[in-house]
Length: 64
Image (cartoon, rainbow, N blue to C red; front, top):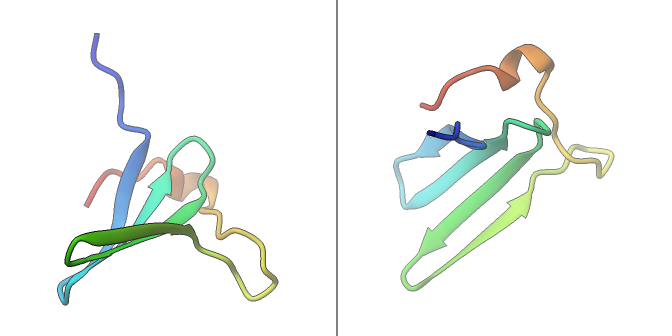
């Protein structure tokens, strides 16, 4: 039985590795950045300090 992917990439930048990933279960967006031997993942926050959450119709979108 194949499980659906929980996270989908919604943005990718060509210079280096900077991507935005969305959790399909919660709609929360995460910023992933890597370079050299390191990398990091952080929740994207809006201007009020709350997590960026996708509208319900966007959560159904497929991977880039």
